[in-house]
Image (tube, rainbow, N blue to C red; front, side):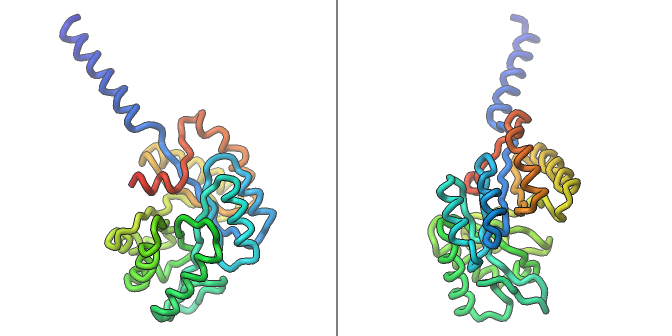
Length: 245
């Protein structure tokens, strides 16, 4: 074999090895806001593949839907309500507000976590105000870090969030949301963001995606999720993506 052919063969082997090492782009999809509607929650849980379900604490169907998701082999997160605006305190049950003391914060977090069985992590609901506050994010990460194997997903509703920085400093495994599938619930919006999801996964290698149990979102996912593998994408659990950080 000539030197040129040897070099070409070596290059082909290198490219093949790189492809095997990187694998398919990985996508973790979280469906937020479960806990109020039993029908929408069950429809979401029935979606194919290893999706994750974030359950609002203290809501009427929180325990039932968390149990159903777990029994279906799906992962469950505590979808913790955090204050979004200075003059707009959290209205959901067991939410965290800026004016809470450290004791009130801890007690509310404990109650919220207890109300969502099988939760393996925490992700933020709203929270554009709280996630900007280092002190409150420190409290949150201390609560998460004190419980073995919990991790944090920042829904990233503001680019000023310090949640990931504080998580890193506290030793909490964390990721942030890369794509919202449904910033509004119009079918054309969901389709557009699903296409953007795939482009971003191609670019970054792995991404975290959040959707909600809207009819348009669930209809698109029912149709498109079975096609992801053939299109070259790997749908993975959120825990797998966080642990590979």
